[in-house]
Amino acid sequence: MTSEGWGTPPVEPISQHYIVCGGNALAHRLALELVEHYDVPVVVLVPDRTRDHAPRIEQLEGVAAVVEYSSVTEEALRAVRIETARGIAFVDGDDQGNIHAALSAQGHNPGIRIVLRMFNQRLGANIERLLRNGTALSGSATAAPAFADAALSRPNSVQVGDRFLHIAHDDDIRSDRLCIVADRIDRQDLGRIRLLPDQEGDSASYVRLAREFGDDGPIRSGADARLAAGAAEPDPEPGGIAALQTLPGDPAVRIAWWRRLRWRLLDTLRFFTSARLRLVLITALVAVLLAFGLLWHLNGNFAWTLYTSLLDLAGAAQPDQPGGGDGSGTGGTWQRVAQVVITFCGITFAPVATAIMVEVLASGRRGQPRNPGAGTRDHVVVVGLGNVGTRVVSRLHGLGVPVVGLESDPQARGISAVRALGVPVVVDDGPLAEQLRRARVKHSRAVVAVSGDDATNLEAALEARAVRPDVRVVLRLFDDSFASHVYATLDNAASRSTSYLAAPAFAAALMGREVLGTLPVFRHVLLIAELTAELGSGLIGLNRHDLEDQGGIRVLAVRLARNPALYQWRYADRTRTLEPGDSVVVAATRSGLARLNTALTADR
Image 1 (cartoon, rainbow, N blue to C red):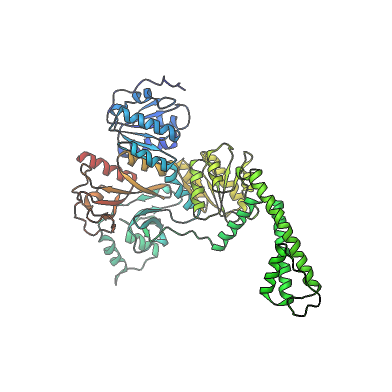
Image 2: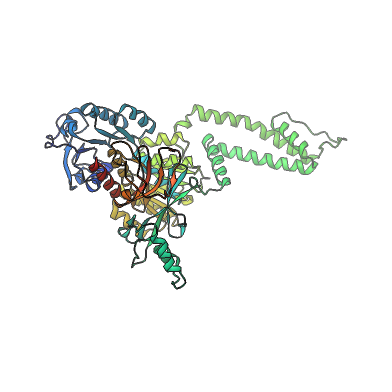
């Protein structure tokens, strides 16, 4: 590896190019995105040519040069011709290093477009104010919702205005869908999927339906009818379809309230007490409840029983007087026994409470990761507490879903973040099967494996299935062919790629486009973007036909400049041209958005 200050020789004179700084999976996908879909010259600055994804980046056709520097220094920026570049993306390193590099790049080229990866989104929003033409994105924040929603078997959604867009499949497709986003879906061969298939115009589906269900038309199965209504052409082979739909609100998490309450109570009790203290408290509580029930049975007066029990519990015992004539609760020997039990249990509560405070505050229990307790049920096990794993845990915890973290590296940065949420963590570098057992995978509802290694993630899924065959598994896999085999062989499983989900958003941001979110369609990605017609953007004067004729794009909603707060879904006037200040929300494939960007750039 070259040391700082040496580097490789500068690239040949080049201009109007884009620079990708990093050698990780996101840098790999981003470079591939730029050369394949945007057809622009790309120079990649890697820290080490022999490690991580750098060797595969060098093999990409279309990459103009790969330059090696151990860090993004002034000399490194000059070596990649920063002064003539159109855009630069920093997708490796920590937040502080990326901020410093971005400011340095802006000093060399004040007009350059800058995109930097930031884990701390609030800091990123503030840094954007320091950049003349830049934006900060979080790859983990972009991808985490897809992993969390896949674990809960609920639709991943992107919020646009007051609606939530999501992908529905086959029988879940409603008649009010916005558009067909994929057809020819075959889980055994995901390469057959077509995203945003060609359409013949808005009336084509109605004409086809009339032919299918008219007086003389044949009656077909539901799947064939949906295909006839939504696909551009009949598919000779059977296959599912997917459509884009809207929801009035964020999809609800289906967890019974009493399960959430039980989990919260048990989790709080485990946090403040050890196993022995819990045993003492539970035994005393059961004894008090039994004694209370006995007193109530003997005198039949609930109010008097509650009054006496509380006094006895607080240590202010009210002794029973033999032969009491007023009938105020005299119950004989058994009443006295019950009162004695309550009194002595009350005496034990004070020292136990003191012991709890000492254990929590003096012994530093708050500073130690907690293991899941015996009462952990219906939870999600997240394997790997890196950037993505930490985001997934935070999202699940925010939704009120019980979650347990699992990490083999005790120095992982996510452990402290997860611990701050009060989430149990299993930290162990032993066999993965033993770690999953400690995480109580036998009683879990799903396992999300998001470590940085495909083999480790697959191992976690298989070990979890060995313990519980029906558990839901969600895997982070970079390799597409690997993921296709997983889909073909594992039931109740989903595969996601962090870099595959995040790279299109980073590429679009480099081109000055705002991506609101990404929606996975199995291993493919659909982008939801908002385009604003501004002076110099190339959008002014275009209509809906002009946008969709590029291919791979559907216009979903329009916001007019005179009423920017109103999203007009299914905007009927396809011939109205965009005026300054108008915005359109589109669903697009990666190549579709790239083609539109190329066309708009050429028209400037």
